[in-house]
Length: 197
Image 1 (cartoon, rainbow, N blue to C red):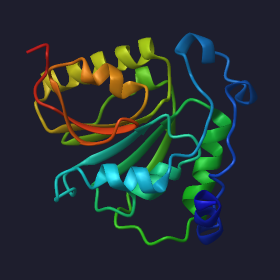
Image 2 (cartoon, rainbow, N blue to C red):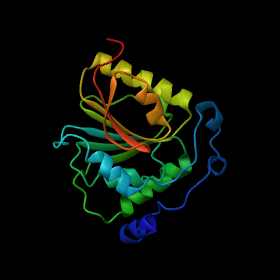
Image 3 (cartoon, rainbow, N blue to C red):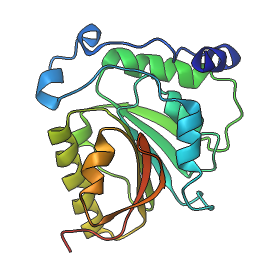
């Protein structure tokens, strides 16, 4: 009901879940992609509040952004930029429509969505917050973590990861990822240093 209220207030379409088989993504098996289900606004807001008080230097990236619900949640905070990455053309189109339609007040006005394979996305420079709501299988998440570590190694900077299970299990196994908030189902981490250093 919370997501329905959010959609009614903002003239958006974020509530209805979409299975991977409905999306028609040719490489969904190769990349271990999942379907879409909106993240709880309450959970996301709680995770964001575990971050530093000054969010203005940070770019927020939702990896597997679906219909863009989390982009809209994040836009109510003063991030420098908010970016969604989505491989499904159908979901990306809905996100763009939602970003145009949403009536909420935004403290971040630089909000966008890109349609591409997450493993081909170049992480932005500067401080980062990366959000994952189970976008792909563990082995693909592990490959994305390598990309994060390479980026941190080439440009040391604050990087935070916000995750919903099962990815928190993988991060708990890494000594370079320090849990700073959340619960068993949703967690916030700070990368202390690149393990490649």
